Amino acid sequence: MTNSDQVEPQADFRSERARLLKDHLATVLEARQRAARVTQELLEREVRVMVMDGMSPRLAEQAARTNVALRIIEVEVELENLLFIYRERLRQALEAIQPQEGKTSS
Image 1 (cartoon, rainbow, N blue to C red):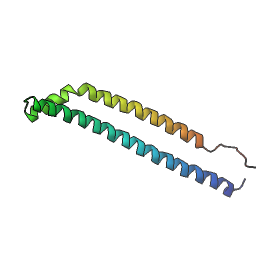
Image 2: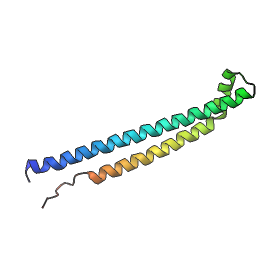
Image 3: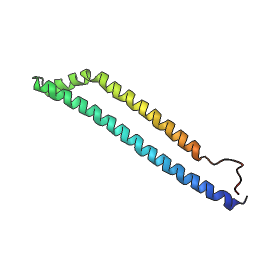
Image 4: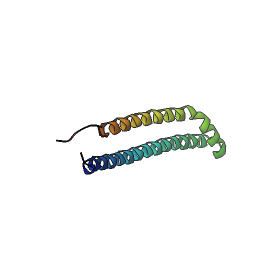
């Protein structure tokens, strides 16, 4: 096997690896942004309800953080579980494209 025979599979591997990593990064960023949006929406909704009930905005914001703390933790746990799944999928995909040593081409 010549060096040129080895270069093409390595280039294919690198290009596919880069694509997988880029896709993984985009997926992770989107999941993190979605979790942040959900957290923000939970807080905003709770503050609105408390202000409508007559609380001052500042006090409502403090109370809202306390009231939705457990729900926010649940969102964070769900995000971590999702990120674990994404990492496993990436690991499996990277293993699947890993060049095999000692493979001969016909």
